[in-house]
Length: 492
Image (tube, rainbow, N blue to C red; front, side, top):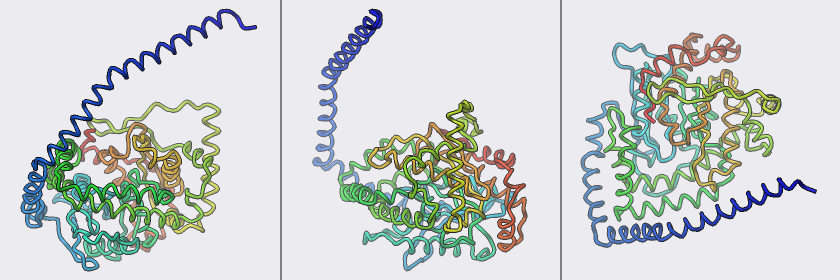
């Protein structure tokens, strides 16, 4: 028998549940006509905008104006003296090489910035300028078909080998005086992280450090058919650019975002908007969807026995509990790091962390079976990882979220000197605006390499082989944090 008080409480709870359901139903009935009216008004606007000719006429003249002025090669090279065009595999690629300004001491390693998907060299302009002002020589470029580079009119995506060969050629031609005499720091954001790993697997002797800026998980290759179908959306958008609808929404919603978060010294918001309105922008995303999956599979194969794509679901989930170096975010005003409250150390948390570290130890033993794992034992790695996924679950399934977290953990723990910052409240797109932390990490990598003062690639390899105990104890250095903060706050 159950006490009468319990039964009364259950009845009261049931009544409240019924009332709540009725209330939601009434609210839906009241709002449904308003929602339908908004949808119908939106459809009518689109039809009038297109079939009245207003949209197509606007798009026709606006695109002609952009190509003749703000996107013309002459204008680009007038506003950016560091921009040049080089011929690679018979295609013209846009390359930007920035060097430290007078009075700023040059850093030890040059930096290269491979773009992410739907990102261009111009969109990375602010990060490049911040790194330049910290003393780095920085190379950015637009891949074949992207941004200011020659359009991929055939629509045939380049192969992984072609993409990596292009990147290597750009790095060699951009700094011919350093060819064979320096090692690079690669900053790979989003898809750029996957391309960076494919590059490093082929040119391990050219890399000293790597910043994984919330890179996409290479286990994405398991969803090849899904991404190829999703790419058809961009194919469709490329074929409806003429309507002016895409320009309308990009101008309406993108101008303030570009102005606040991405505009730099040379590439202002109006240029970034014009670039995003081009038919080639959508066409290239369609082409690069396949390239991303190909590079993801290539990276998986380069990790070999240490690939997180080989782990079962339980191990993927367990790896997420490996302790990060820091968890928090940078201050919106001054860009300085603000640490989250420490997690309560319960027996359950301790057990999960112990299991995660045991999995890492087991994977670390397989380093000899992994091309990238072998390299990771010799380089300095920093990871910046978002933990909010407001994206369609059909792409970022729970398994892919777990894979992304596990990959970031492995990048931290398998490296000679690895650190990982977790941003619990940021999503993928907002990570690129964390300029202060990004710059501080690149400075930190260079500070460690400068501290060891290797005089040549051979000396650097010897340093890596011997280990860097003193360097491994170095966190985000005071100099790196200070100079990073001077580069400008997040603004997000």
